Image (cartoon, rainbow, N blue to C red; front, top):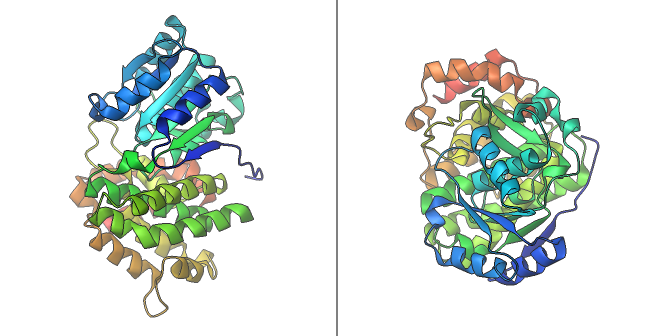
Length: 377
């Protein structure tokens, strides 16, 4: 966690999509792109615009992402198509899962062996080399920030949901056009927004030393605090959408510090088969409990977070976050997401082993995680 490195090229403006795609595919030397997109975008105008922007070279090879969590089997199948069709770059249009899948495809297209070899918990960080085909990320939600992030969360062939982490997984270019988020539902807007807020909070509290990331995280919190409710209440508010997309970027850029116990739990609890809830909704439920657990180890940082979120001294930070979740209409208990005691027992040892546990302010055991999840049930 000693490296401080911000190198991603980002286009950020309303309506920038076509111009940026043409310029960046040319700059990267991409002649035939593999275009990965969400199923919900199959008949959309934005997909047509993107195909038109790519076609002056060779017609892109299209792949519609399955409606399930990104997994190794899908990534391996598509990486073979990437090679067979003579593709030399990847364009990912969609949510964080779509972009994470693109990263895994790029990795398998250039590296051999099982994908789990490259998971951070398996010592894979040093195995990923700078030989991946270029990825251009185009997010259609504002939350995870994976469009500029060094990680990807993938279900391995053995069923484990593991994180791939490397600076070489960062997309070469991110095209952030807030108009692409205008039609996102209030529920998804709230969930993705809380994901961005959780990223900013956990990176700021991380044990790693990275002063630039601390500043980026705090600024992201300030943006999100002023705009998340506006974006949920009026999805056509382009100013609020722009600021939430910026907050998501803040949270992702700050992740060089690492995350913490909230993500250790959500990585372990997330169900890859038929997941019916958003990662950010799960984060928002467990965030207060993990923050309470971490409180003895964070010094005055809660006070700084409270000021960034606009939560006055008369209201405790944790209580303020609970009230925000309620106003956004997100569930407050894990049971509302279909999670039961058996799922918690399975998840507890996985949370302890998750790579994000190593940067939590206070080391947590499997039993600690079991207790926290039961409190949130």
